[in-house]
Amino acid sequence: MKTLIKNAQIVNEGKTFSGAVLIDGELIIKVFTGESIPEEITKGATVIDAQGKYLMPGAIDDQVHFREPGMTHKGEIATESRAAVAGGVTSYMEMPNTNPQAVTQQLLEQKYMRAAEVSAANYSFYMGATNDNLEEVLKTNGTDVCGVKVFMGSSTGNMLVDDETILSEIFRNTKLLVATHCEDEPTIIRNTAIYREKYGEYVPISAHPKIRSAEACFKSTSKAIELASRYGTRLHVLHLSTADEMKLFDSGPVNKKLITAEVCVHHLWFDEHDYITHGTRIKWNPAIKSAADKAALWEALLADKIDVVATDHAPHTLEEKSNTYFKAPSGGPLVQHSLVAMLEMSQHGLITVEKVIEKMCHAPADLFRIDRRGYMREGYYADLVLVDQAKPWVVSPENILYKCGWSPFEGMKFSHQVTHTFVNGELVYADGKVVDGKIGKRLKFNR
Image (cartoon, rainbow, N blue to C red; front, side, top):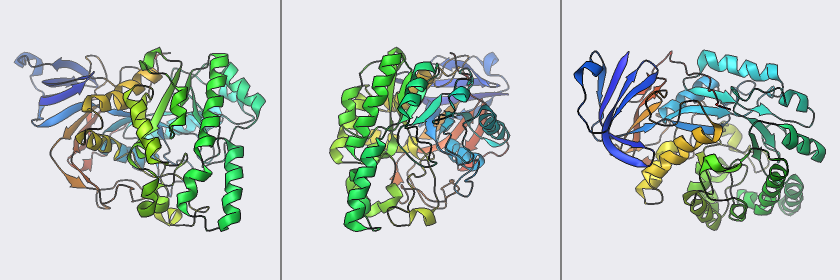
């Protein structure tokens, strides 16, 4: 089947221009840049008139938690991937801290098999590292697995790797990309004890960035970078949250770096003042911190010290989140609203639209060396998103697709709206509805 998307404002590779894109089957066949469109090429094509809309590559989210298996009351691969495509995210990489944890090749492959049955978006799953599964980690095939996840700070799922010898062996021997959650556990334990002694079980949520402090983040990120530098490991540090950590990273093109960095939408959008109104709904690990930290993250993102914008999408039920500090789990749903949130920030002059696409589409594809995705190029997979620049809408329970049914952006009026999403050339989302029965593909990597 052929599809012609015409009269679009194409955003791709640092430029925005009027043009059209022809899809044939799974692939982009032609990108027209203002020239006339030959009728013989487009004969028989379904035509979509994109007048007044951006046409972009689909976003690639390198950090999500879709909760399957074992925690499907919070989310499932089917539900969360549908939310993803509704938000213009056409590919995702999912974390191993499920139940059971993806810490053997067999358990990892079971997640791929499930995604092949139900995922509306393209998918990859990280292999999880623990203190005692190095042999399994080293079996991982880098051509069809995105990377190895190392928790250097505890989070949901208790996969902390705190054995110094094992950490060194992982960094020394792993040939794949190593993605890290960096928070220093002894620092967090010490801070927790201080606040528990002061408040008991009723620690205020405003203490979260002091318990999971900037010091904890800096110490752990410094350790990861030291190990990667010592052993020549391909390191990607996830969800950075502090100004101090920015001193540890270099500016430059992502494909020239051995050590790369990610920031999440919530750390760019919220700061510690928002705990007053949002409470535990914006409790994440690492914590949302000060306005100065947020400003430093923006500066580093625009200076190309930070390479990728992602979500750390991690749904919990509202009942779970509506709890006291220690009982409320960390994490929240974001994958349906990440692209429009970043475009909203472009509307306010914080970042250009072209830079949004660089950080959410091009850079993840380059960083992970994903095969033929992340760009609008002839011969690439047709993972494409149409965004109406002038179609305001308000986030509400009626249009939230997460299984948990809520969003930290609830009540927010966004100026941009995703109207169409294509995955591998197939229309999977159009005008508020996900097209049932469309299944994404397993991501492949050129390594």
